[in-house]
Image (tube, one colour):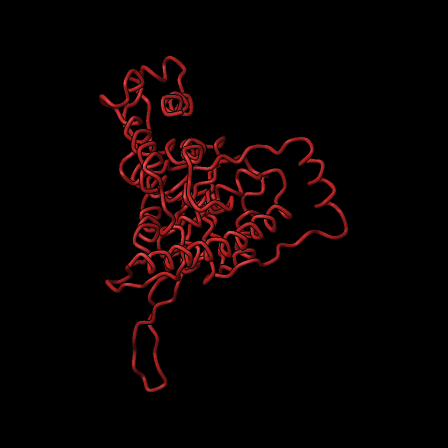
Amino acid sequence: MAESVEKLEDGIVRSAEQVSSQIRAAKEAIASVIFGQDRVIENTLVTILSGGHALLIGVPGLAKTKLVETLGVTLGLDAKRIQFTPDLMPSDILGAEVLDESTAGRRAFRFIAGPVFAQLLMADEINRASPRTQSALLQAMQEQHITVAGARHDLPKPFHVLATQNPLEQEGTYPLPEAQLDRFLMEIDVDYPDRDAERRILFETTGAEETLARGSMDADALITAQRLIRRLPVGDSVVEAILSLVRSARPGEESGETGKFIAWGPGPRASQSLMLAVRARALIDGRLAPSIDDVLDLAEPILKHRMALTFQARAEGRTIPDVIKQLKARIG
């Protein structure tokens, strides 16, 4: 029995080393095209390796669309893009049934798949679509299949949604409901690049030749990595840190003095997301087990879209990142 366990552990170690090298190569390939967004690249990779979806928040022109295109090429995934607009209908995303007539005169319905049938779907400006259209995407994100005319259609594997939102222009938009926000494993802020990165962007993107993305993985390798991440061990101290952090982000006794500023907080899906994300981050760094530092670093992007502050807290000028920082300080 002990010998079989040891062989299993050796197999996990060898698989982890191989997968980790593939992921690092993919990260370097993405960074050769997307400049000055190392944290965004890492968090996006963590999300995909965890099997989740990400919400990218940033002003126009910060390479959000370019990032998704590059991820598709580098990870070997079938990538598609949908520009969300107020008049977009669910059938524009999911697909529809059409009536076909054969040469013999027989009529039958045939399903034409929509752009949601992709391994990597970019939902550009997702908050511009109506709630009806957003609800159609919600089932796809959570259930990994859609239903059209009572028939189930499974989505390809893996399936990931990277949605974008413009934080400035809110006229004519439909805020995402809390149930849909909770389906996103992370909310990733895309900030302006620093001076050196922007200098590199000027030279690399305005010359005669432009650096193109190169493939480093394929869909099967990604699925293997996602399965491996679920097998990586997590220490008791890390598990307790996850539980303490998520539970303290809810109103109640465990949040202490900070609880009076929290209107509602994250559910168990946040704990699940954090458990997977810290493993994925450890694997990207070439480690076989996550640490408490991983929990602290990933706390904000995983928790902030799953929390809301009270009127009193907003009136005092407090923000969700400030509250999360206070909660993190109690752990380490």
